[in-house]
Amino acid sequence: MIDPHQQSGERLRDRAHGCVLGLALGEALGRPLESLTHQQARQELTNAPRLATGRGDQAAMAMLLAESLLQRGRLDPGDLSARLREWMRGGARDVGHVAARALYLQGQGQPWADSARAAWEEQATRAATAEALVRGAPLALRPDVDEETLARASLAASAVTHFDPRCRWAAAALNLMLARLLRGAGQGLPGSILGLVQERHVFRALEAIPTLMEGQLEARNDALLTLQAAAWCALNSNDFRAAVLTAVSLGGASPLVGAACGALVGARWGANQIPAEWLAALPDAPELIRLADSLIQQRPPELPGLAPERRNGPTRTA
Image 1 (cartoon, rainbow, N blue to C red):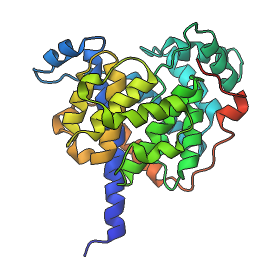
Image 2 (cartoon, rainbow, N blue to C red; image 1 turned 90 degrees about the vertical axis):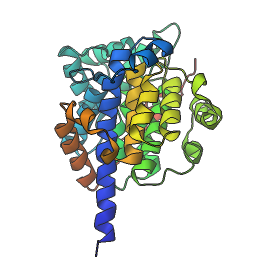
Image 3 (cartoon, rainbow, N blue to C red; image 1 turned 135 degrees about the vertical axis):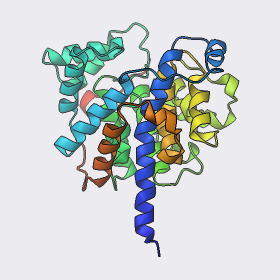
C-alpha cells in the first residue's frame, strides 16, 4: 500500500523540480526569439525549437537567491545584493539599466532599499521593468510558508533592484500563484489570490487575464504585461510544451515571458511533463534539481525582515 504522505511528498518534489527547470527552459527557449515580432517568432518555431546555450540571466538570479536562502537560512537582501553584484561583475548579459544602477549604488555603500528607490526615481518614465519578476521563485518552494510571509519576502527580493510597486507586487503575485500550484491548489487562479494583492495595477492586470485572448497578449519588458502573458499561457494549456511554446512565440521579451510561464506551468504539471530532449539540452538541470530538493527540505523557514514599503516610506506611482 502506498503511503499517502510519501505520495504527496513526491508530487511536491516533482512540481518543485518542474518549477525551477521550467523557469530555465522557458528562458532558454525564448532567448533565440528575443526582439522578434510575433509572426517572426512563430515562423522560427515551425522548425524544431532551439534552446540557447549557457545559463540565462533569469535562471542565474533565481539560483543566486536559492543559494543565499540555503546558506543564510532566511531571506537576506544584503547577501542577495552582494551575490548579484559579484555576478554582474562576472559578465551578466542583460541585467537591465535599473538593476545595474541600483547594484552600482549598493556597491558604493548605499543601503539596498535606498539605492533601488534612487535608481527608479532617476528614470524619466518610471518604467516597471520585468527583470526581477522571476528572481524570487525559489521563495515559493520553501515549506510551510504562509502566504502573507511569502508575499513580504517576494516584495523584498524584488526590491533589491526594483523599487517600483508594480514590479514588487507582480513578483509577489507570481510567487503566490506558484505556491498554490506547487501544492496542487491551482483552481481559480489568478482570481483566488486577488485579495492578497495590494497594488492596484497588478490587481487589474490579474483580474483581466480570464477575459483575454491570445492575440491580446503583449511580450514587452514590462512587469505587468509579462506576468499577464505568462499566467495566461500557463493557465490556458493542457501541457508544458504547448504553454511554453505559446509564451515564447510572442517574441519581444520572450526570455522573460518564457521564464515566468515555464515556472508556472512546471509547478502546475511537474517535471515529468517536460520533454526529455529539452531537459537533456539544459546543462544546469542537475544543479537546479539539487537546489529545489534542498529548499523543500529546509525547515523551519525564518521570517523576513520588514517589508520594503516600511523601510522606504510611502510608495509612489508613476
